[in-house]
Structure formats: structure tokens, C-alpha cells
Image (cartoon, rainbow, N blue to C red; front, side, top):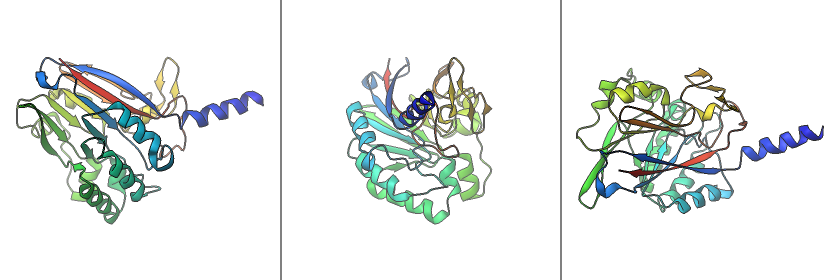
Length: 270
């Protein structure tokens, strides 16, 4: 019984003990002036609150001292949607660094009115909401390209179109030859990102496999099934690096196991 009690305490702690994980991504294609550029990635909040008004999460982001904040989908959860929690977080985050946001599958599943309330609120606060859009980040006369892709279910549910999640469809969103960063909720399309020759992809969605097993990794992830290949961390092929966040909140499963919520700090280098 005592061991069972300790296990419960450990699981509860593991669902609230937010951690910061850092990765250094190097590329010869990165402009010199972006050497040391810092990106904080937030994914799969699912209306979670880390501390009152997300103070633990915001303090950790501020300590990371990012140049930009990338929010890679599922800020809200369609089973327990609370737009106000998401907007309260965004209002504080934009005071730390410029924020860039793309939709996840949960934004696609809420009523249109609720999603529009979220998006209009984000835009009013100064968050850059990217719908298959390209934006240039400039630093001392040099630039890199940031593209945000909608989740495929968002395009289907909101616009009634079948999404072209292919390497050609992805590469068509980039107009120049700059170092490319892609914000895309879904890690399972890694081969298409590689085919599009994207330099850096930031994804989430897999929740780290929800239950992480020692020496094995994640147990299951949406759209990848059991023992997902792209569950968490950095994956590299050719010129492409993909960072997959374990995320912060939970959805179908109300808890995680051996899988602490995380924010990610990425430092770019040459």
C-alpha cells in the first residue's frame, strides 16, 4: 500500500513538474547574425495552467530569455475549452517576446465561434497567427523565413478543403532561399518536411507518447499508434531537424506517466 501511495504521489508530481529542455540546432545555412538566436516552443497547452494564471510557465519562459515564442497548436482543448485561459497566457507571453502561433487539431474541433473568439483575441493581443503563411524575421540586415502551417483537420473542418500535406505543398509556402523554420503541429509528416528541405520544424501533437517507458520511449501517440517513432526530442535527416515537444497539457488521457510537461528552448548556431 505504501508503494502504491508513493506511485500516486510521483505521478501527480510528474504531471505538474514543468521542465525546460534545451536543444542546440546548428546549420551552415544559418545567417551569421542569427547565431545564438533563441526560440521558446510551447505546444499542446490544452487549457492547462501551471501555477495560478500560468505563473510557473511564464516565469520559465522569461528566464529562458527567448528572441521569439513559437506556439505549435492545441492551445485549447475541445473537450474542456476555455478561451480565456489561453488569452490570459498569451497576454503575458507577448510581453516577453514576439509570439507566433499555428493551429492544432483541437482548434479544428471546437465550434467556429469559439475558434474565432480565440484567434481574434490573439490578434488583438499582438500574437502573429499564421495560416499557411510566410513571415521574415530580420536581425541586423539579415533574415530567416518562418512559415506557419494549419493543422490538416483545421483546413478540412473550417475551409472544406483536403489538405496538401506533401513536400511540394510545403515547399510552395517558402518563397526565398533563407534558412527555413516551419511551425507545424504534426510530427508524423517528417518525411514530407525532409522532402521540402525545411531546415527546422517545430511540432507537438504526440504528447511524448503519453506514457513513457524506460529504454523504449512513448507508448502511443495520435496518428502514429503504438510506440510512435516521432514522440519527443530531435529528429534529423539530411538538412532537416525536427523538434517534437512533449507538450504541457493532457487531453484524452487525463494524466501522463514518466513524461513531465515541458517547454523547449532552441538555440540556433552555425
